[in-house]
Image 1 (tube, rainbow, N blue to C red):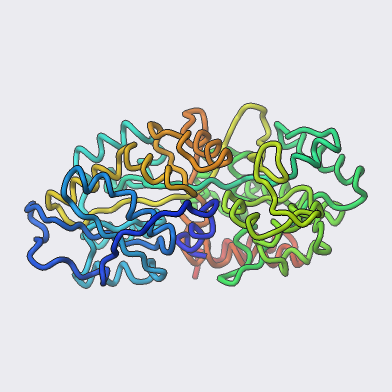
Image 2 (cartoon, helix red, strand yellow):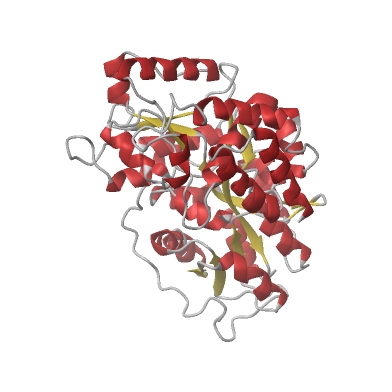
Length: 444
């Protein structure tokens, strides 16, 4: 699954009722006489991206105060096929003023066209002030900074029922070993598997499994090895990557631990990735590993007594970040978008500066359903306690953050052999063969 598609899946919780501004009739059609490049100002700035629906409406609404203050109209138009279309449009001379790019790899492709302008000093200064160096690095190529981060999402959550935990007398684990001990306690108490998982997806099955592996590589081997793995310098056949598979296998390949509510280990591949929300809400599944997006799925399922589950620390369902091997250390992976500029006119540059500011982050976060890693944005504006906690995690300077590895790898691997390998692994293919098969994706 391409990251823009995955981001739409990861957008947590339904948006608050945001009234849409009038969108441009065509993403590429600017307002006549409003200028182009060369530094002259124009009244309307066109933004393109893969964010659609209610999220697109909210994004447009985020610029209302900016427009009132500056007189610059911002028109964002979403395209579900953005990733497949944007490079062609840019190389064909039909670039928007600004593109919201959901993947560092795609951003690099756009930079390589020579059409993306390096960020201005003002934008770079804002990013230095408002984001961690890790986030800035994802918008930097060959020591040139091009694109500021925008919104973010966080992966590696374990969803559970606080009410069940209270009933069983168990607590949120602080280390991986404690999580395995918790699993054993739940199995002993309930007489059934503790975990449920689903790898099936209409777009392409297997990607939820890559998130498991990425989490364990980061937690076991650390960020340096993770970065080397992403770069291809550490191969999938490396013992450190096999160690991550073995740890994940201790859960996902263990018939005593999975697949609660759905069947045996192999049923993971036939279970839709979002359906696990129903099993957690009904009490049939005690634990599931999934990103922040799952909070939205709980709006459409029911508890055992037929009610919509309350997502809260003392409610029907909630989530904790999957712990690492050392208590107190926090390593997380996630995703987000980057704001690339193609026009150097004054109005576009003002929009780019605004989008790098905490004021923009606050405006969008307050409308609901999203978070930002902007360190100076206000997490209290988030639309739920869950999103507030997620945003604070991203803002915490002690948090080690890494972008989703599969989205940084070549597509033949990240959205090819890696996804397929996870399905084969669940179906019973041995780990060494699976690792070799995934690594072979680099030759394709």
